[in-house]
Length: 102
Image (cartoon, rainbow, N blue to C red):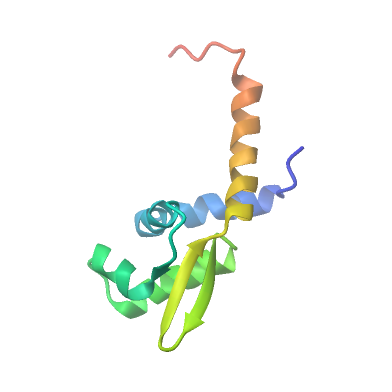
């Protein structure tokens, strides 16, 4: 049974609806910790814009942040991502017996 509330799931869909944030999640999905400087090299955005995206991801517990010196280091929050994945899996399982012909 899914422990994620529908409002949380809806908010995460909205957060991941932004291509930059979705790409950040994709980059962090390789289980490596990344510094903000490393992420900035991937995008054509300013540091304040990256910080804005990271704050949103952090607020919804999609990432974890560790500060060291002047840089922040980010990792994927696997617990939240797995709960979100479980919600999606349940949707797929409920529809797995149905024909989806268009």
